[in-house]
Amino acid sequence: MSLPMPAPTDDAVAVHIRALQPSDLDAVVAIDAAIEGRSRRDYVERRLRSAQGQPLLHAQFAAVQGDRLVGHLLGRLVVGEFGRRAPALRIELVGLRREFGRRGVGRELFDALLRWADRHGATEIRTLSAWTRSGMLGWLASLGFELAPTLVVESRVDGNRLYAERDGPLSIDAGDGPGHEIDFGRDEANDQERHTPHGADVRAMTAADLDAIVRIDRANIGRDRREYLSARLGEAVRDRSIRVSLAAHCDGTVVGYLMARADLGDFGRAEPVAVIDTLGVDAAYAQRGVGRALMAQLFGNLGALRVEVVETAVPLADTALLGFLLACGFGNSPRLAFRRAV
Image 1 (cartoon, one colour):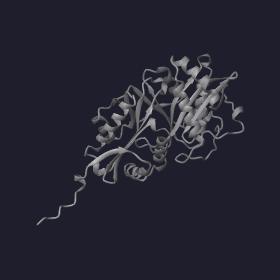
Image 2: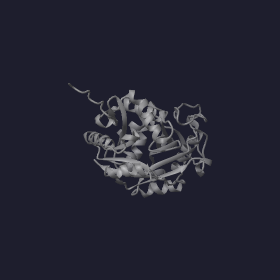
Image 3: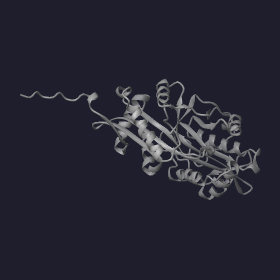
Image 4: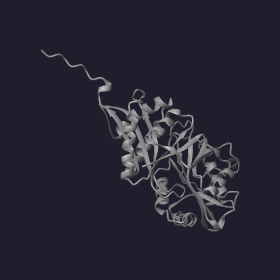
């Protein structure tokens, strides 16, 4: 006589790691909402859509028990921000169902990310986290992360003095709120006639500006980053909902540039945020207010969109850039930068 076997409990069913799929969207949104206390569907959906468009740049993993998704980890390969040479993988989103928080699932997800980073030539993994998120800080410490030699600085948009110096929004309509599709690149009749009070004509960046931008960038940092700059410009063309790229013109030529992205979601951000990726000014036009004109126009665009904060992460060794940002009203962010070697 045989006795019926008891049904397996959750603890007895193995968790395995696989690639995240578009069909996982609802489950990822639900886990994220349970952690953050609000739904960030637009943010998660954009991340999954970006991965479909550029699969070689995105590492996205799911932890699955049976047919149930119990955790996720999303990363993106980055190269070139503010002159960094080596590729790195940036963690963008991580989450677990509460009951799986102390069962090693997070480490399994991270190990999969680590192997992916190694295969794709990344030398380190980076991320940012608010210093108040003790659970996240503990998880990062357990995985071997350390503080990066990077300072995260930020500024409120409407509280910055450059906001008062702004022109009207460039190529966007006031009222296009963040959290939806934000069009940074819509054509405007007077785009080619836009002037700032600083003497530089700041316009939406176009493909025709790329050669001049590469030249300025190469002179400033000592090497050619055409591939990186072209990729960022290409993103702005493909998805104007999350990219803003500005070029400053003077004396009939490009003399400066600024690239930023709209972001909402990294580890507990409650407000819409813009992140500056890179900026540069032709040395021949230094001290002529070009950088300030670019920043003022950025603040004008972001104010129209009701984006509340702009931030960036700067290497501590780049004292000139830090000095410029501090002069523009930036200060310490409550977010810290972390890194871990691959």
